[in-house]
Length: 124
Image 1 (cartoon, rainbow, N blue to C red):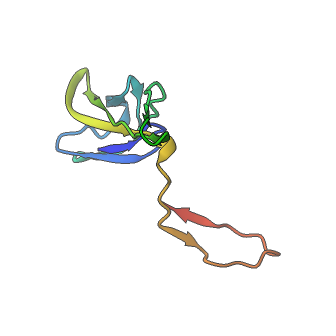
Image 2: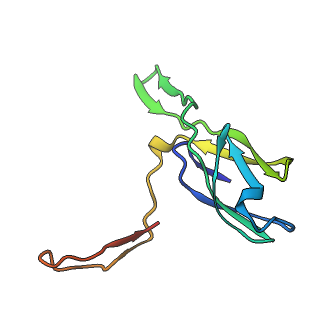
């Protein structure tokens, strides 16, 4: 699993035997608690927490005097705890979220009358 260090991505862990109550399961990444969205006996959906304490380097190339931002990815262990039993076999790779643009997959409606109030839905 990979995403920006600003967090907010929704991921799923698929397996078997998950408890049906969100109170019986916790997920931590980068020493921060993930928000559990839903749990079934075969899947846990959660929001990845931000990891702001990662430092990304800037690479300076002296031969041309240009500065290039280098995205450094950092692996963090995902700790899944169910009723006091923990598993640390999964990892999350944080990348520099300030250099990662959001991906918009759809906007609805595609056009609207500016004089009429309404709701615009942006998905991504």
